[in-house]
Image (cartoon, rainbow, N blue to C red; front, side):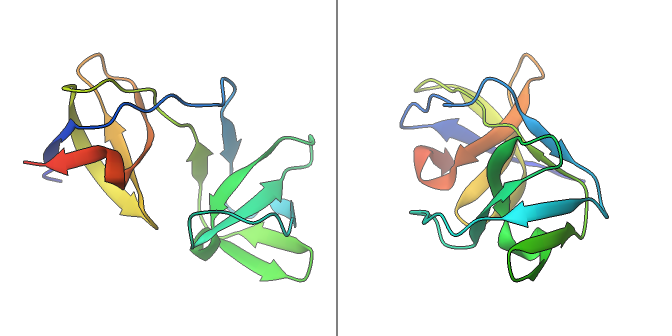
Length: 114
C-alpha cells in the first residue's frame, strides 16, 4: 500500500495513555456520549475500558454492539512540523506513523497532506 505523506500544522496531545484494542466479534456496551466528531461512538469493553470507536466498525443493537473488525483506539501526540505517513482515514481522523515508527490516530484538521 502506498501511504500519503503529511505534515503536522497544529500540535495534538493525546489525552489517553493506555490504548484500547478491540478484536473482531468482541461484544461492547455502547454509550450515548456526544462527540464533536460525527461517525464515532463511545464504547466500553468487557474489562470496563472506554474509548471512542468508529461507528461503522460496530454493529449496534440498542446499548450493545459487536465489533465488525479489529480496532486500536491509540491517539498519537504530534508536534508542528512533524512528518507523518497516513495509512487510513476515518470520520475526520487519520491513522498515521511517525519517523520513530509510533502509530496512532490524529485529527485530520491538524495535518496538511503533501
